[in-house]
Length: 411
Image 1: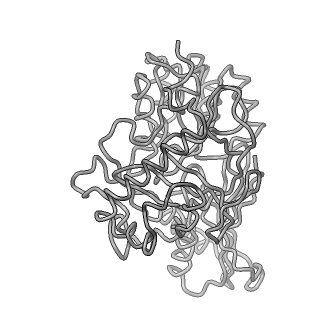
Image 2: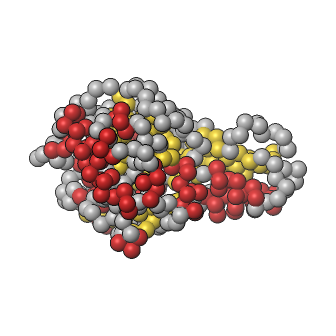
């Protein structure tokens, strides 16, 4: 049995760097006329000069936090897509809303390597609980399972009774989804006397996977690997079973950049994850994710030679992922505008019983249950997530410009 997905994973770092930058120059030369935003980003820069990371550092970072406004100005993809809309495979939408393309190439999201490194193989049956409704999550992970030759149960999130019926009948041996929902499924199964004993492997993403939750999953006899993915980039990095760090995916050039700047940081320094995606349909160049991490020194003991990320270490901006869905400060501002007379609002994100929880704190002189209920409805409408509402006295929230406060433990 092969121990790696393909030969690309074990190239020397020098060979990978040379080949990636050669691909980058060819890709930009071919696609720049088709992607106006790319052309603007490269204004005054000779594509032929992009031979290494130092040269790439001259290109300004294009930050995800700007996508919402830019896509409204130039719908649907802000001039970043190099393939015509009608020639794409899927047109997807993440909360915000931010629109995401998917092309026709096999394993377009690069998820196959994450499944393979997590111990999944041809003939496995994967219960995929990532959402298939508008958002890319379900399709990202389904394409990865198909890339290794596994069958997929397209379950999506929720509906735990139906999930347990499917598990009982179809006997999946692998799970894909958030770690939170895996815990919910396990607990519901135990409560119903229908333990999910068939599932022995898992690939999780979209939410924190702290040591306490890792221990719980391991106690159930499930070997789980994390991966870091975004709706724009697909799988950015993934764990190899039993090895430290998240290995950066092939087809990407990843930098760690000082937040708010274009300056790349040295290995070991915490900064914003900035990704150049070598993809003909959506050739993102120095795309700032808004997520914080650092490069771990050395190479993975599994033999894969690409750099490793330390994992998610917070946000460079206030855009925050809750239960696998991004919540943007603009959405909280929309809630405030829908209810005249409110003062400051702050969305506090916490962990409780190994699940993400959020509470909207709103300054108001009208502390009524009806207002709290109306705010809860507005919050769910804007974010597609349920949250508690806490009405507080005017002037009681800090005047620090913070709209979203992520108070979850890191790790």
